[in-house]
Length: 442
Image (cartoon, rainbow, N blue to C red; front, side, top):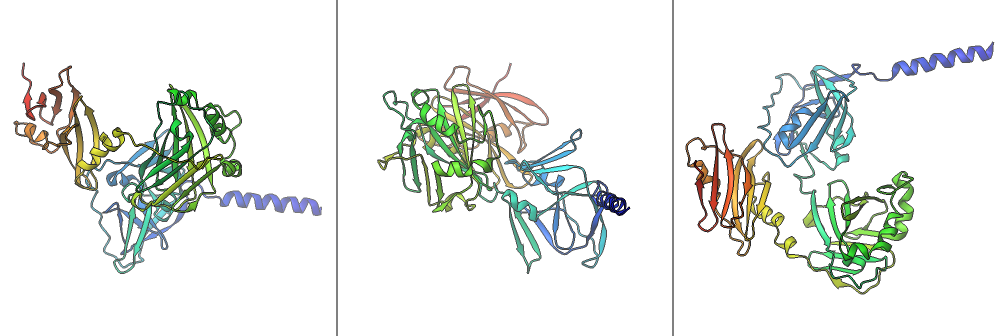
């Protein structure tokens, strides 16, 4: 009888526990009137306040340099940072004229899975809108600053905060036919010099900062370096927890100790102890993605020194020559063409002696101007905005014209392109020699 009574009590407690689990549509709590204003990437955004936390409208993030995708069949909402500042002017935010702390309504549990920059984040629903806690965004590398006197919360995304960038750390040497791989290498980077040892000449290495972690991509290409680097590739492959040619993938934490015994990464003297490696492959190349997960978040200009060593490298360092296409390439030029913090390059075209850059210039969120620039490869000379000449034509008097369909038709002195506006579409060519634009007529 005692056993039977115990069983009944256990089943009752299990049912009570199951019934107490939050279900979609359940009331999660009340939200309140607040005098706190919240800004995302410099513009005020709609929020609700639940007492100790500020929650922002996830769907509204579209207007603040984000893409927002809703998947009806999977019931997922994906929000991820974008360079695009032209999704529209952020909507005006109004506050109810009520005493602070006045209950305004309920927020509810939801079965919608919300992702921020590909990572799941807690979310609630109210009035058909999805809200995510501002504090939870820190986990994805967002800066959250509270200003008590101004009663203001400022949220800055990693890209807008200067925490998303790339640094080139090595560049392969095509002249490695007689070089025998040692399976070891080291790289030393400072603001004034870049040095490497041993197998560094066999691959390209790029550091990408996501604002949350640092990913070192090691790429072997289809040249003598790829054919001579099998020893190094085999050793890197043995440290992968997942990826190309990994038969038994495991949790990355299971490989931390093994990786640490072979590889060392430091940034500004801070050594990473959580390093994970995955691998990939493509047509004529092999890639390894080495992620340091526990290093301080730094802006590019805050990085003083990076060291990366693998195996047992020698102390015989040599200067790593940075190719001209990196020092003076289109990505560097595009950065110089930016005028405002929200500017970005839409695309570029390259001719034998020139570049054409299609830039999106945005002094503030939601207001974008299309610009087209001609850059002389030899002198670095930059033209005035080419589209200004197009705008002088009736029907093209718009900030956004949208040039497209670029080509040269095997004529180095002429650059052909089309433009469309809300009123018309027309073909043009730019005379490279004199910098003038001419409409193409039948």
